[in-house]
Length: 355
Image 1 (spheres, rainbow, N blue to C red):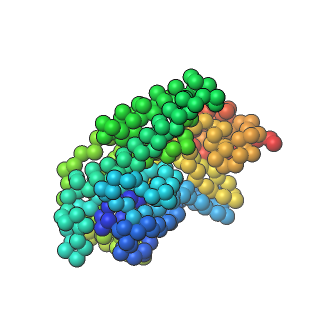
Image 2 (cartoon, helix red, strand yellow):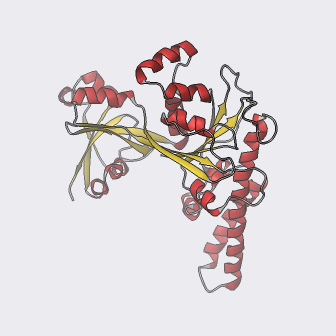
Image 3 (cartoon, rainbow, N blue to C red):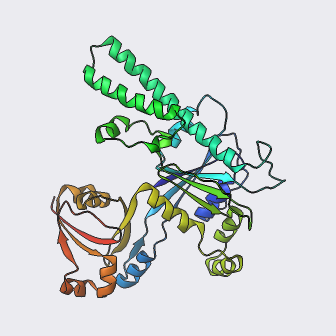
């Protein structure tokens, strides 16, 4: 899972990045220069900790999430993003959109005053503009192709034209492409575009200490809103683990933002975790909700998917109830499943295969 942390200049993107990654990047990145910080962090999951205690493996491996702290996003250019910027944004699985709510005279707002609603709408408009530019360019190419002829079949071109007309109409109404649903054929046509307004968005209202969250709704599908005190969260994340809980209690922070943001991101992206266990390794894997057993096997290794025979499966809760794999087998909760089995969050799987 790769998430881009975006927002207007001086919104506190790097502060939030440090809070999520326990990093110490300088929080004075240039607001107008294309600049990126990257960090890969473990996905907190108490189930992995408990499974590791049960199996005593040589290695314990958590699922991973990659955060990209992206500077250089501007509002009001009307020209779209640069090629490198657009390429990077298109590669993200989703966005964490940091919106400034705090007032700090030593960090002036580039637009003169703090206005979360305006800032939220401004960057959304930039993403929409970039998608609209891509759609219009594709429409021009399709019209040229249809006029010249001699290439693909006419009905194929016309089907693509109908799709891009639908995209253009939605964007022209200032609605993100997340509001639309698509067929498998349409998904295939759009697979190479990476439209920005199709990607899930977690809006993070970045508050000052003890500041009340703004009353701003964000009604678009595949979106969620969270408020956090960025500076405080960053300071807590940078403390030694033994001191963190003390200060969390003092400041009334029940859960660090890392866990909350990852959980919400998983929900938005339709992801879930399954596990493999053994003496060598206990490991968490990430797979789309609705994935079948073969697709889960392919996440582990392509050979497992190619030679898939059966999957031994038990839910995490059933294993905890049984206390051991041997007892689970006696109780019948450790079972064999075939290719079409739909993987559930928390499944523990062992893939039988032959290549």
